[in-house]
View 1 (cartoon, rainbow, N blue to C red):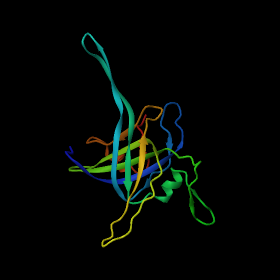
View 2 (tube, rainbow, N blue to C red):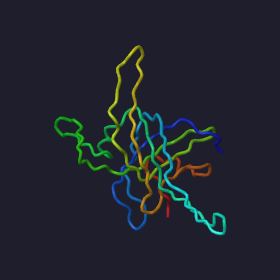
View 3 (cartoon, rainbow, N blue to C red):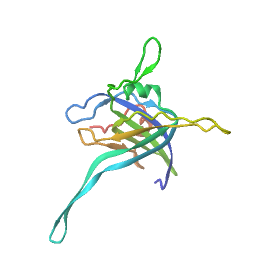
Length: 187
C-alpha cells in the first residue's frame, strides 16, 4: 500500500471521437503521450446539501460536479492544439491558425503519480480546456525555461462517471494497458 505520492508523469490525452451510446462510455482516440508534465492542480467541484429537522441535520447529500484546475506543461503539444483546442494547420504553409469560432473537442486526460511502493494511474473522462496564455520573458544570467498552463474542467459523462484510478488490487493487465486505450470497466 502506497503511503505517499509524488512526481506527476505519463500525461496523455485522448480526444472523444464518438458520443456514448445507451448510457455507456464514449469512444476515444488512442491516447497521445504528452511529455513535459510540470504540475496538475484540480480542485473538486460540488457542494453538500443539508436538510434540518428535529433540531439536527436530518438528511445530507454531497454533489459531485467534477473537477476544475490547471495543468502546467513544458509546452502545449501542437497536436493537442489541433485535436482538442480546435486550431487549424494550414495545409500548404504549415502554420497553426486560431479562430475565434473554433470548437473545442472534449478529451480524456490520463496521468500518473509515483508512490513509495507503486504509482497510481488516473483518467479524467470528460475534460475541456481553455487556450493557454501567451507568456514569455527575456533570458538573463541563467536560462530558465518557461511553461504553459491550461485551465481544465473535468465534468461527468452522461453515465455519471467522472474519473477512474488504479489501486493496490488493480490487475497487472489493466495497469499495462492504461496508456494504450482509455480505461472503461468491462461489462
